[in-house]
Image (tube, rainbow, N blue to C red; front, side):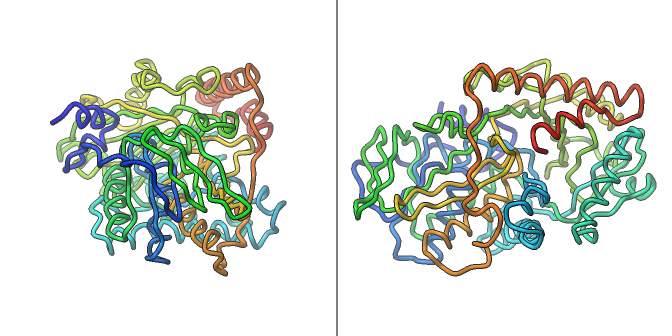
Length: 467
């Protein structure tokens, strides 16, 4: 194992478990002319390359990745391939109408299945299991909030996808200490995210595109007036009529994009593999994904090798949207995440934590994921997934393909197409806002545990930030 392989494995449980070497692919060999240059080798870039190459095998496609494919959120996330789209139905309906908002959600359901179909068709062994998602209630406030969420979906004609479960029904999925029931949806799958990213990169290569790793991008610009766009890297200049920016939480490092997304760190822990007698007490036999009704979000999955992997928010936002490896190490947050495991699953309380990790997710100012293409300049972008990118990136890849190739498609009428979010406020305003939001959500959860009643200050904050 080389030094780079060891470094990449240290980024997450998932990357540590990839069976093949993580030594980088060859970098860009020098100046290059292609038809499509994609900046970023995570899910957005890889899905876009995959569908573009499948639609037109003659296209010359280059994926330019600073580290290795799957290095960022694509190789570190919570293992959910989820139905969830960041923007609420009401916000989408304001822009595009009620039918379009519902169509967006139905396409998200379809995206979960499409990921599974590609994995099966391409032989990507990432443990894809569509076991659904249980969102558990452990306080009366959770019950009220999760029941209201189910009723909200039903009011948009989507109630058949969400069902409230009484405690005994919820226990048939996962036995959670203090369960008062839960909201269940079948529209979610568990995956090994790093194996998905690495397998997708190989599928992209089989379709004729090239993935260049260890190729940092310094700057990029669109074309226009018949001239190609230019991507300047440390290894040479790539010229292409179409340039796709697919950098999600790392977008803040792109020239002119420092305030496009707010990079908020999400952290995770994983236990050692649990013995059969512990799983007999917990259940979780269907590999469902798991969350609960708290404000400061947690998310969890049962891994293929029998661990509990649980993550959540709570790490601080760093002034001026700074990103650094050292921000992935927050011992207090890791201890809190292990405490949550012990609280919800007492049978696992003696299990050791073997892996801790994290990374930034991208949050747009209006909490509204976008997918855009400017034909005049040749610049395309998709992102702002707010942590729900595993499935949304698949939809992004298909949508960008239709936009770039100018193909008539039902996807092009979805509300997120050509949606451009406003920029975040300059510092110190966004630092103050992000820090305050995290503090309010944490104290709101404490308040709800004490009182059993929904927190009014959390509801007010959610309205203020457009959620």
